[in-house]
Image 1 (tube, helix red, strand yellow):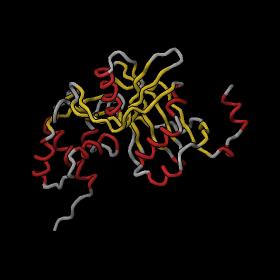
Image 2 (cartoon, one colour):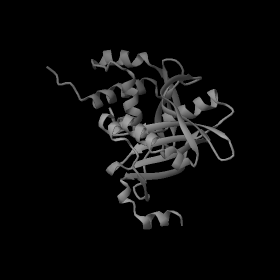
Image 3 (cartoon, helix red, strand yellow):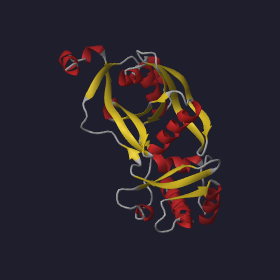
Length: 265
């Protein structure tokens, strides 16, 4: 009996076949249908997960593309898979595929306000991260706004993209009374911040809240419980980093008064 390859390898085999069924040298973007995942899986005798979206999710945030696909990338460009309407996807070449926290950035110490009961029952890394960000008002601290969580795991559709899910949606107000819509992407464990989700979040705000300013946030768990926050934007159809800060939640007696004074300099 043939040995079943690990899930990561199965996903790579699937996407490799789909990619080269459509790719031609010099191509910078092309679309494929969701149903092709099933068709190719049957042809390669690969067992699929119950949720077909897990294949695309893994390639967006968790695993690398096969070497054969990466070999087609021009210097300084990377392939991403984005939504392309209902039940469709698009391969597209961009400059940045994923956002990684800087290892050399200073850590800002924040008194931990997370309720112990929440820590005890947090279900997974993403849920824990969203809860920590919410209870410690890290969005307020990072953006200098007063914000409120409006909804989490919001499933909706965006024209030209299709169905999306926003991890958490905040609304905010500044000292002048201006209102903001703040979509938050959260990644924990081995998952990395992907530009596809940020792009989707920004397009959602443009379509659903056209009169308000979007401030797209991505949160990433780092080692030692540090939370990295990024403010991202779209410029020339590419994701750009506006700001990045790292926050470490500690008990009040661990706050260094000297460090506090340094923050004000």
